[in-house]
Image (cartoon, rainbow, N blue to C red; front, side, top):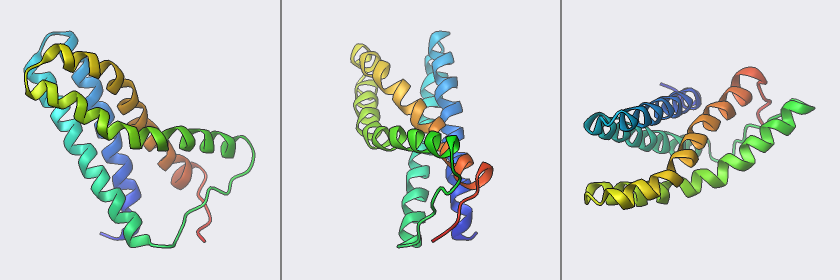
Length: 145
């Protein structure tokens, strides 16, 4: 595996996380609590693996940036997505912790209250992570500086 493979791996991990989050929502709505817990644990693992790969990629790339160079509406859309994705990606980690801890402690009222905030943020970050990858590396390949 090469460093250049990591963005695709990161996008795949984000996509898997999004699917597991959605499956977890379906499972809890159907009152399948054990399946919900397994889906959400899987989402946490894939998100953690994403974070590890993401940090490794940026550490290994040190100083080499990939820039979005396509002009017009794609550039505007890309920077809007990236500009919302980035701060929410920072916020989601403590939100996940504040949601998981009450679940582990079997304080499900607190868990449910936090999950109402965490779910849309985590899902948005996972989906927009895939979109950032697709826009930067697949749909509008960028020049590397």
